[in-house]
Length: 306
Image (cartoon, rainbow, N blue to C red; front, side):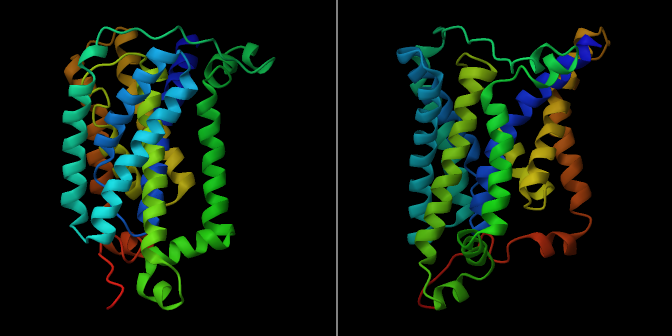
């Protein structure tokens, strides 16, 4: 039973990475912008956060540095696609490739660096409950902050005027512009906010989840987070559930290896990506369902004069 508690705890931690990044991409897509550069932003944020913690010893400063790196790259992406009307898909892919190369270059001197040991977190009393304590109540605070972030995003998107304006920009930017809303500035703000969350996810990977720096350590999680937004039909609560599902699949490979299951490690490592492909294939069987839930202007440029 203890091994299952550890599996659940690891699933929550792994799912947190995906949830934070996917929530950032969800904000982008609610505003009508597709950002394929999540992988690159997360890698740059990972090295920025790791380097900051190496020099300061403060994990939270590392998170802030990661968010700043993600926001900066997202702002550059936003200016290109929103003001200069470059192709969103090509620009996002370019950003992803840039992030892979730049993070590898910037991280050369940090490959052997070590971070200070993380404190042991536990919610008083609840952390000592047998089985449930290790599984649910001994997580890093960011795990619980992510859950609150989902609740806050639901409230923002569906219970506030600002959220309504953001969704209207994603559904019909021409109508929002006709009503006097600054569509381009709103989209840029959404892109920067989404980039900062992707940056937070990247910094979490390198400073908490696997506290070290290795080239390419994001390992496709940015792409999985991008798939999660479609899997969740652009709903924050479903994003969280989907993140835990994919996080569980990721951790299952280590659990099976620990229990002595004789399966090739390469095959187990494929599981998260196979699961992503299978889920997307199943969802794509009903294009009408996707069109109903997808923001109408997703991926389309906006021309104020049109």
